[in-house]
Image 1: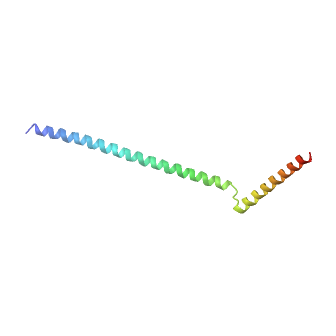
Image 2: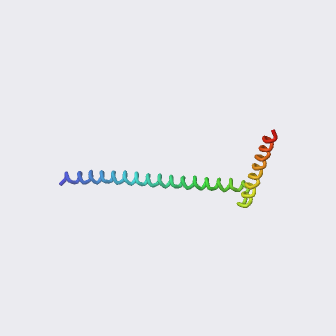
Length: 91
């Protein structure tokens, strides 16, 4: 019987070491995952905040204004091409 007690104690100690190691590794991994997710969310929030700040500095235009300016640019380009064609044909 005396030989059995030390074996049980040694077995209990080994199981305890493994259990402590497993908890330590598992908890460390969970805290690392949590910290990574927290950093990821903070980075995304910072990106979104910078985007909103940049958006405030731009003048927003409507689709109608865009189409009107596009039409003006096209008309100017057509007029320049016509002027160029006139100058070429005059020679």
